[in-house]
Length: 274
Image 1: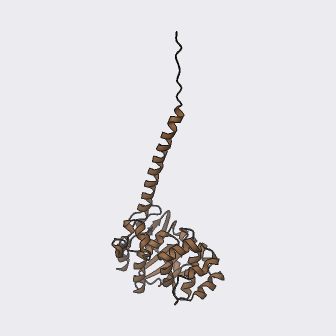
Image 2 (image 1 turned 135 degrees about the vertical axis):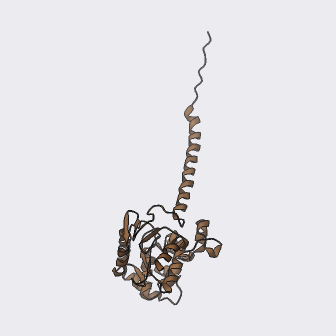
C-alpha cells in the first residue's frame, strides 16, 4: 500500500494579509465617519455635545441650566472683557481661544481657514453662505443695541499668552484691533507655530499688531503678570455655564455651542431686540 502524503497549509500566513487589509478598511471607515461627524457638530444649525435646549427664560448648556440672572451677574464679575452694560436687551457672550481654528472661523477674519474647513463655513464674501457671528455681534454693539463679553477657554492649547495680550489691549482701548489681528491667518500661524505660550516669544506675537497699538504697554503688562490669573478664572466662569469647548456662544441665556453661522442665531437675537 502506498503511503499517502500529507500537505500542511500554513493558514495563519494566508490569513494575516487579509486581516491587515480588513483592519485598514475598518480604520479608514472610522476615520471618515469620525471626521464627518466633527464637521457636522461644528456646522451652524447642528447641535451636539453641549447642545442647545431652549425653555422659557432658561437654556440647558450641557447639563447646566443657565438663567438670565446668571448672565446679568457676569457684569459684576472681575473676569471677562466687556463692552456695554446690563441695560442692553441683548448680551453676547463668547468663550474663545485665539489658537482655536473654529474660533477663527467664527471671527470671520481668516477666510482661507473658513474655506479649508468645508463649504458650510465658507464666508459670504468668498462665495459661501457662512456669516461670521462675531462680526455681527460687534455691529450691534457699535450701534448701542447689544453688549458683549469675551472669556478665554482652552480650546487648542496655544492661546493663553494671546488671551492675556487681549486683556492688556483692552486696557488701552485696542481690544478689537488686537483681536482682529490675532484671529487673522497670520495671527493663527504666529500663535500656533511660533509663540506657543512662550513669554520669550512675546515680540513675535506683538509684531503682527499695527503701529497705532502701544506694544510696549502690552509687553510690559504680560511680563508683569497683570492678567496671569485670568486664564483659570475665565475657564471657571465657562464651567459654571456648562461650556466644554470652543467657541461657545450665548445670546442672553440661549446657548450656541460651536461655530454657528449668525444666520442660525439671528431669529433669537431679533426676538430679544423686539
